[in-house]
Amino acid sequence: MIHDMKPGDVVGDYKETILDLYGGISRVVLYTDIETPYPDGKLIVSTTDKDGIITHVNKAFVEMSGYTEDELLDAPHSILRHPDMPSVAFKDLWDTVNAGKHWQGYVKNLRKDGGFYWVKATVIPNIRQGKVVSYTSVRRKPSRAKVEECMKLYPTLL
Amino acid sequence: MPYQFTVSPDFSPDHLSGWYIFNTWLQKQTGQSIHLEMYSSFQSQREAIKRGNVDLIYANPFDAAMLVREKGFLPLVKAVGVSDEAIIAVNADSLVDDVANLMPGTKVAVTEDPDVRMMGMIMLEPADLDASNTDIVVYDTYVLVAKNLLQGNVDVGIFLAEAYDDLSHIIKSKLKVLVRSQISVINHSLMIGPKFADKRDEIQGLLVSMDQDDKGKGVLKSLGFEAWAKVEDEEMEFMIDLMDTLAI
Image (cartoon, rainbow over the protein chains, first blue to last red):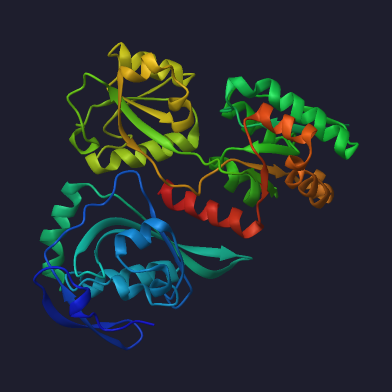
């Protein structure tokens, strides 16, 4: 399940917008300019089913997203979708992994408290007995230079 | 013909005799003849696997995909509470305090240990460093990596965290850790090959209960382990998928 973001969860001054997410979901999101730096040495790992519903998260995912594990499990992965991310990036992601290939890119993720964090994400299809059964996403610390490139590029794709 | 057992060449030298003790214990418990062959390099071990000369292996996670997907190996157990983590360290006198401040042309000391090298290189990515813009120098042991850092022959060392922690206090006092990985889900596993697979359940059962008697506990201690935990097929598949994402 995914809910509209609540002002009580947000830290700092925020802006408000409505995002149209995959699967016909509409969500009110509240977002701030506060960045949480990606922690050194950690990987954020999650698995989703074929519809993008989260089935597994690791501790780093919980810590960085600001949500509890219970809030994340069974929620669509788009719970992390930040309004500054162009939808074309996610279309490319899904087209790529649905074709059985891996996808890699730089993503600005939205936290429960309205803040954000940048990641270098790799998504691969999990193939069992020749069939795609789920997807695993592993996020690692991005280089600042790559993040700055994306900060210039992504607004042109919105 | 005895079954052939081998151990990932990155084993700690302190535990070499422990693996022979473990093999003797395993032969007694199973009533099977098992020969332990230690290879000095990952390359020579992989050639033996390709020739079909390995039936049981304590495998580096980097080789798990090849073992499962190309050679039909199945997971048995992993050591409880043990995971492979990497450390990036520099000379204590280095002006660099953050990986992000390392520059292209950095000389990076590594060993042949493939999963640690991969994790270490990932931890250099925040500085936009990779194999194409660094000078990778391969040493036989982590002690040599440390020595060359101390002598100023290299700028950065990539260590297995356990090997770094085992360095003497004097050496560690002259080094500075920039990053220690906290991945937790990458680990060595004992795996069984197709020729030996009919004994999988029996061996798995023996291993997971090994810590429940004094003799078994003693053998585990000689390996530096507390106990073995069963590895399910899906857990192994997940680790292989994870390694795949990191190799990209």
